[in-house]
Length: 295
Image (cartoon, rainbow, N blue to C red):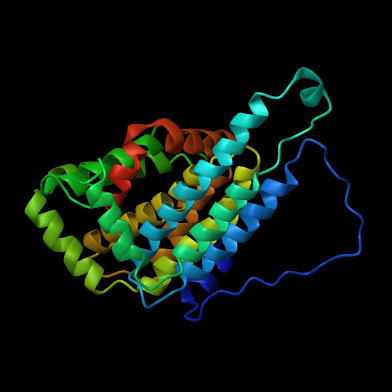
Protein backbone atom coordinates (compact mmCIF):
# COMPACT_ATOMS: atom_id res chain seq x y z
CA UNK A 1 0.00 0.00 0.00
CA UNK A 2 1.57 3.34 -1.03
CA UNK A 3 -0.01 5.10 1.94
CA UNK A 4 1.46 2.60 4.42
CA UNK A 5 4.81 2.88 2.61
CA UNK A 6 4.77 6.67 3.01
CA UNK A 7 3.81 6.41 6.69
CA UNK A 8 6.69 4.01 7.28
CA UNK A 9 9.28 6.15 5.49
CA UNK A 10 8.12 9.38 7.11
CA UNK A 11 8.18 7.89 10.61
CA UNK A 12 11.19 8.99 12.65
CA UNK A 13 10.44 6.99 15.79
CA UNK A 14 11.24 3.26 15.92
CA UNK A 15 8.35 1.10 14.77
CA UNK A 16 6.51 -0.80 17.52
CA UNK A 17 4.79 -4.12 16.90
CA UNK A 18 1.58 -4.50 18.89
CA UNK A 19 0.54 -8.09 19.56
CA UNK A 20 -3.01 -8.98 20.50
CA UNK A 21 -4.15 -12.35 21.80
CA UNK A 22 -7.48 -13.66 20.64
CA UNK A 23 -9.79 -16.10 22.39
CA UNK A 24 -10.44 -18.01 19.20
CA UNK A 25 -9.18 -21.61 19.41
CA UNK A 26 -6.71 -22.39 16.67
CA UNK A 27 -6.49 -25.69 14.85
CA UNK A 28 -3.16 -27.35 15.48
CA UNK A 29 -1.42 -28.45 12.32
CA UNK A 30 0.48 -31.64 13.14
CA UNK A 31 2.91 -31.00 10.29
CA UNK A 32 3.79 -27.50 11.47
CA UNK A 33 6.88 -27.18 13.67
CA UNK A 34 5.65 -25.00 16.53
CA UNK A 35 8.90 -25.36 18.45
CA UNK A 36 10.87 -23.98 15.51
CA UNK A 37 8.31 -21.19 15.12
CA UNK A 38 8.80 -20.17 18.78
CA UNK A 39 12.57 -19.99 18.20
CA UNK A 40 12.02 -17.88 15.10
CA UNK A 41 9.68 -15.51 16.95
CA UNK A 42 12.32 -14.97 19.62
CA UNK A 43 14.99 -14.53 16.94
CA UNK A 44 12.84 -12.03 15.05
CA UNK A 45 12.25 -9.96 18.20
CA UNK A 46 16.00 -9.80 18.77
CA UNK A 47 16.70 -8.93 15.14
CA UNK A 48 14.16 -6.11 15.18
CA UNK A 49 15.60 -4.63 18.38
CA UNK A 50 19.10 -4.81 16.92
CA UNK A 51 18.00 -3.14 13.69
CA UNK A 52 16.63 -0.21 15.71
CA UNK A 53 19.85 0.32 17.67
CA UNK A 54 20.84 3.73 16.31
CA UNK A 55 24.13 3.66 18.18
CA UNK A 56 25.27 1.39 15.34
CA UNK A 57 25.52 2.33 11.68
CA UNK A 58 22.88 0.85 9.41
CA UNK A 59 25.57 -1.25 7.69
CA UNK A 60 26.66 -2.68 11.05
CA UNK A 61 23.06 -3.55 11.88
CA UNK A 62 22.67 -5.34 8.54
CA UNK A 63 25.91 -7.27 9.05
CA UNK A 64 24.96 -8.34 12.59
CA UNK A 65 21.50 -9.40 11.39
CA UNK A 66 23.14 -11.68 8.86
CA UNK A 67 25.50 -12.99 11.54
CA UNK A 68 22.66 -13.90 13.90
CA UNK A 69 20.65 -15.65 11.18
CA UNK A 70 23.73 -17.55 9.95
CA UNK A 71 24.60 -18.84 13.43
CA UNK A 72 21.04 -19.79 14.41
CA UNK A 73 20.34 -21.49 11.08
CA UNK A 74 23.19 -23.91 11.82
CA UNK A 75 21.24 -25.14 14.86
CA UNK A 76 18.01 -25.29 12.87
CA UNK A 77 19.71 -27.40 10.19
CA UNK A 78 21.13 -29.78 12.80
CA UNK A 79 17.59 -30.38 14.05
CA UNK A 80 16.34 -30.75 10.46
CA UNK A 81 18.97 -33.38 9.66
CA UNK A 82 17.82 -35.48 12.62
CA UNK A 83 14.24 -35.27 11.33
CA UNK A 84 15.36 -36.60 7.95
CA UNK A 85 16.76 -39.67 9.67
CA UNK A 86 13.57 -40.56 11.53
CA UNK A 87 11.82 -43.82 10.79
CA UNK A 88 8.89 -44.41 8.46
CA UNK A 89 6.26 -44.47 11.23
CA UNK A 90 7.54 -41.24 12.74
CA UNK A 91 7.24 -39.54 9.35
CA UNK A 92 3.83 -41.06 8.75
CA UNK A 93 2.51 -39.61 12.01
CA UNK A 94 4.39 -36.36 11.53
CA UNK A 95 6.50 -36.89 14.63
CA UNK A 96 9.35 -34.39 14.80
CA UNK A 97 12.57 -34.33 16.73
CA UNK A 98 12.89 -31.43 19.12
CA UNK A 99 15.85 -29.14 19.57
CA UNK A 100 18.35 -30.63 21.99
CA UNK A 101 19.02 -28.78 25.23
CA UNK A 102 22.47 -27.96 23.87
CA UNK A 103 21.02 -26.44 20.69
CA UNK A 104 18.50 -24.35 22.63
CA UNK A 105 21.31 -23.24 24.94
CA UNK A 106 23.42 -22.29 21.92
CA UNK A 107 20.57 -20.24 20.48
CA UNK A 108 20.19 -18.35 23.76
CA UNK A 109 23.95 -17.70 23.82
CA UNK A 110 23.92 -16.46 20.21
CA UNK A 111 21.10 -14.00 20.89
CA UNK A 112 22.83 -12.80 24.06
CA UNK A 113 26.20 -12.51 22.29
CA UNK A 114 24.87 -10.24 19.54
CA UNK A 115 23.39 -7.86 22.11
CA UNK A 116 26.87 -6.89 23.33
CA UNK A 117 28.18 -3.46 22.39
CA UNK A 118 31.33 -4.96 20.85
CA UNK A 119 29.52 -7.69 18.87
CA UNK A 120 30.30 -6.13 15.50
CA UNK A 121 33.98 -5.71 16.31
CA UNK A 122 34.23 -9.31 17.50
CA UNK A 123 32.40 -10.59 14.41
CA UNK A 124 34.88 -8.76 12.16
CA UNK A 125 37.80 -10.26 14.06
CA UNK A 126 36.31 -13.76 13.77
CA UNK A 127 35.88 -13.28 10.04
CA UNK A 128 39.50 -12.11 9.70
CA UNK A 129 40.68 -15.33 11.37
CA UNK A 130 38.54 -17.52 9.12
CA UNK A 131 38.76 -18.51 5.47
CA UNK A 132 36.35 -15.64 4.71
CA UNK A 133 38.98 -13.01 5.58
CA UNK A 134 38.23 -10.99 2.43
CA UNK A 135 34.65 -10.24 3.49
CA UNK A 136 34.00 -6.49 3.81
CA UNK A 137 36.89 -5.90 1.37
CA UNK A 138 36.25 -4.89 -2.22
CA UNK A 139 38.71 -6.40 -4.67
CA UNK A 140 38.68 -3.20 -6.72
CA UNK A 141 36.61 -0.07 -7.14
CA UNK A 142 34.33 -1.76 -9.65
CA UNK A 143 33.31 -4.53 -7.28
CA UNK A 144 30.45 -2.78 -5.48
CA UNK A 145 28.93 -1.47 -8.69
CA UNK A 146 29.17 -4.87 -10.38
CA UNK A 147 27.75 -6.83 -7.43
CA UNK A 148 24.68 -4.60 -7.25
CA UNK A 149 24.21 -4.61 -11.03
CA UNK A 150 24.27 -8.42 -11.01
CA UNK A 151 21.63 -8.48 -8.28
CA UNK A 152 19.42 -6.01 -10.14
CA UNK A 153 19.85 -8.01 -13.36
CA UNK A 154 18.33 -11.11 -11.74
CA UNK A 155 15.10 -9.14 -11.24
CA UNK A 156 14.87 -8.89 -15.05
CA UNK A 157 14.57 -12.70 -15.23
CA UNK A 158 11.47 -12.75 -13.02
CA UNK A 159 7.80 -12.25 -13.76
CA UNK A 160 6.90 -8.58 -14.32
CA UNK A 161 3.54 -7.45 -12.95
CA UNK A 162 3.79 -4.04 -14.59
CA UNK A 163 4.95 -3.92 -18.26
CA UNK A 164 7.32 -1.03 -17.60
CA UNK A 165 9.20 -2.79 -14.75
CA UNK A 166 11.80 -4.71 -16.76
CA UNK A 167 12.42 -1.86 -19.26
CA UNK A 168 12.96 0.40 -16.25
CA UNK A 169 15.47 -2.00 -14.69
CA UNK A 170 17.27 -2.32 -18.02
CA UNK A 171 17.54 1.46 -18.29
CA UNK A 172 19.01 1.54 -14.76
CA UNK A 173 21.57 -1.09 -15.74
CA UNK A 174 22.47 0.83 -18.91
CA UNK A 175 23.06 4.03 -16.95
CA UNK A 176 25.22 2.17 -14.45
CA UNK A 177 27.19 0.56 -17.25
CA UNK A 178 27.95 3.96 -18.78
CA UNK A 179 29.27 5.39 -15.50
CA UNK A 180 32.97 4.93 -14.83
CA UNK A 181 33.91 3.52 -11.44
CA UNK A 182 35.31 6.75 -10.03
CA UNK A 183 32.22 8.74 -11.02
CA UNK A 184 29.95 6.08 -9.51
CA UNK A 185 31.76 5.90 -6.17
CA UNK A 186 32.08 9.66 -5.79
CA UNK A 187 28.39 10.19 -6.60
CA UNK A 188 27.35 7.40 -4.25
CA UNK A 189 29.30 8.93 -1.37
CA UNK A 190 27.58 12.24 -2.04
CA UNK A 191 24.19 10.49 -2.09
CA UNK A 192 24.88 8.65 1.16
CA UNK A 193 25.73 11.95 2.84
CA UNK A 194 22.18 13.18 2.22
CA UNK A 195 20.43 9.84 2.85
CA UNK A 196 18.45 9.43 6.06
CA UNK A 197 19.49 6.13 7.68
CA UNK A 198 16.18 6.05 9.56
CA UNK A 199 14.37 5.46 6.27
CA UNK A 200 16.74 2.59 5.49
CA UNK A 201 16.13 1.22 9.00
CA UNK A 202 12.37 1.25 8.46
CA UNK A 203 12.70 -0.70 5.21
CA UNK A 204 15.00 -3.28 6.83
CA UNK A 205 12.61 -3.60 9.78
CA UNK A 206 9.63 -4.16 7.48
CA UNK A 207 11.31 -6.87 5.40
CA UNK A 208 12.69 -8.67 8.46
CA UNK A 209 9.30 -8.66 10.16
CA UNK A 210 7.57 -10.04 7.05
CA UNK A 211 10.13 -12.67 6.02
CA UNK A 212 11.81 -14.02 9.17
CA UNK A 213 9.17 -16.45 10.40
CA UNK A 214 8.47 -17.78 6.91
CA UNK A 215 11.54 -19.93 7.49
CA UNK A 216 9.36 -22.08 9.78
CA UNK A 217 8.44 -23.95 6.57
CA UNK A 218 11.94 -24.60 5.22
CA UNK A 219 14.44 -23.72 7.96
CA UNK A 220 16.22 -21.29 5.62
CA UNK A 221 16.47 -18.39 8.07
CA UNK A 222 19.62 -16.94 6.51
CA UNK A 223 17.97 -16.69 3.07
CA UNK A 224 15.08 -14.72 4.57
CA UNK A 225 17.38 -12.20 6.25
CA UNK A 226 19.47 -12.00 3.08
CA UNK A 227 16.25 -11.05 1.30
CA UNK A 228 15.56 -8.35 3.88
CA UNK A 229 19.05 -6.87 3.48
CA UNK A 230 19.25 -7.20 -0.31
CA UNK A 231 15.76 -5.74 -0.82
CA UNK A 232 16.75 -2.74 1.28
CA UNK A 233 20.03 -2.26 -0.58
CA UNK A 234 18.36 -2.51 -4.00
CA UNK A 235 15.66 0.03 -3.08
CA UNK A 236 18.38 2.34 -1.82
CA UNK A 237 20.18 1.87 -5.15
CA UNK A 238 17.00 2.69 -7.10
CA UNK A 239 16.70 5.86 -5.03
CA UNK A 240 20.32 6.67 -5.89
CA UNK A 241 19.69 6.27 -9.62
CA UNK A 242 16.57 8.46 -9.37
CA UNK A 243 18.59 11.06 -7.44
CA UNK A 244 21.20 11.11 -10.21
CA UNK A 245 18.66 11.43 -13.00
CA UNK A 246 16.84 14.29 -11.23
CA UNK A 247 19.90 16.53 -10.81
CA UNK A 248 20.68 15.13 -7.37
CA UNK A 249 17.26 15.66 -5.87
CA UNK A 250 14.98 13.00 -4.41
CA UNK A 251 11.53 13.69 -3.02
CA UNK A 252 9.51 11.61 -0.58
CA UNK A 253 7.14 10.90 -3.47
CA UNK A 254 10.06 9.40 -5.39
CA UNK A 255 11.09 7.25 -2.45
CA UNK A 256 7.57 5.94 -1.91
CA UNK A 257 7.10 5.25 -5.61
CA UNK A 258 10.23 3.14 -6.04
CA UNK A 259 9.99 1.32 -2.71
CA UNK A 260 6.34 0.44 -3.35
CA UNK A 261 7.04 -0.55 -6.96
CA UNK A 262 9.86 -2.89 -5.97
CA UNK A 263 7.84 -4.55 -3.19
CA UNK A 264 4.82 -4.96 -5.45
CA UNK A 265 6.86 -6.64 -8.21
CA UNK A 266 8.59 -9.07 -5.84
CA UNK A 267 5.98 -9.83 -3.18
CA UNK A 268 2.76 -9.82 -5.22
CA UNK A 269 3.86 -12.86 -7.20
CA UNK A 270 4.24 -16.25 -5.53
CA UNK A 271 6.48 -17.32 -8.38
CA UNK A 272 8.77 -14.33 -7.85
CA UNK A 273 8.95 -14.86 -4.10
CA UNK A 274 9.88 -18.51 -4.55
CA UNK A 275 12.52 -17.61 -7.13
CA UNK A 276 13.91 -14.78 -5.01
CA UNK A 277 14.15 -17.06 -1.98
CA UNK A 278 15.84 -19.76 -4.06
CA UNK A 279 18.37 -17.26 -5.40
CA UNK A 280 19.27 -16.21 -1.86
CA UNK A 281 19.90 -19.84 -0.93
CA UNK A 282 21.82 -21.04 -3.98
CA UNK A 283 22.99 -18.30 -6.35
CA UNK A 284 26.57 -17.06 -5.78
CA UNK A 285 25.50 -13.53 -6.71
CA UNK A 286 23.77 -13.43 -3.33
CA UNK A 287 26.54 -15.02 -1.30
CA UNK A 288 27.37 -13.63 2.13
CA UNK A 289 30.71 -12.60 0.67
CA UNK A 290 29.03 -10.36 -1.91
CA UNK A 291 26.47 -8.93 0.49
CA UNK A 292 29.08 -8.10 3.14
CA UNK A 293 31.14 -6.26 0.53
CA UNK A 294 28.20 -3.92 -0.02
CA UNK A 295 28.00 -2.97 3.67
